Image 1 (tube, rainbow, N blue to C red):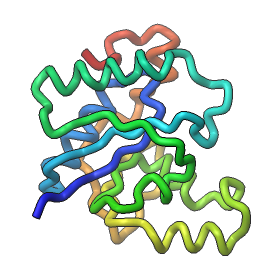
Image 2 (tube, rainbow, N blue to C red; image 1 turned 120 degrees about the vertical axis):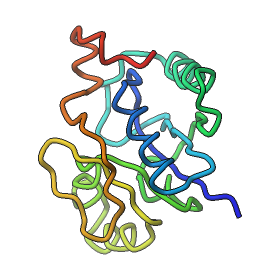
Image 3 (cartoon, rainbow, N blue to C red; image 1 turned 60 degrees about the horizontal axis):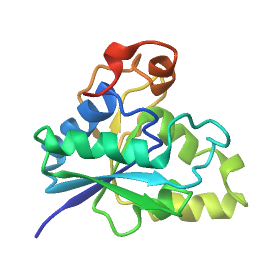
Image 4 (cartoon, rainbow, N blue to C red; image 1 turned 180 degrees about the vertical axis):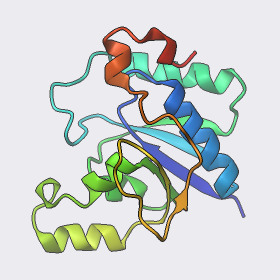
Amino acid sequence: MATHGVYPGSFDPLTVAHLAIAEAAQRACGLDRIDLVLSRDPLGKEGDRQATLEERLAAIEAAVQAGRPWLRAVVTDQRHLADIARGYDVLVLGADKWAQLRDVSFYDSVEHMEAALTSLPRLAVAPRGGHPIPDDCIRLDVDMHDVSSTAVRQGREEWRAL
């Protein structure tokens, strides 16, 4: 039976850290496929985008063509990570996104947040920015917590994927 992971993000731009996290998750979880999922209207990123959706999809496709046949790009209208993760075997994310998942301000109510958290598939979490990692997840062995899309947009081109 094939196992599929989902790695939601804005990927604006796609960085070497995004790819390292995807590769670590693919190995650690034995995933047959990982979908890098772009939300058309992501939570917490209002007005933050620099690249078009098409440009970000093209970057992911270039990563696939560069020897990652298990990777693919998916676009969704879903906004909550729990909704995006529905139907997948593993949710791949950085520890900063784990903190966002537990931030009630992203939900209608505490009950909405609790329902979302209980609906999550198995988690594969990469260290990021000193944020805590849940005990009951797969901890990804990736040491790239300083790499960010924001830093790439500010000139750190060596962190841009491909």
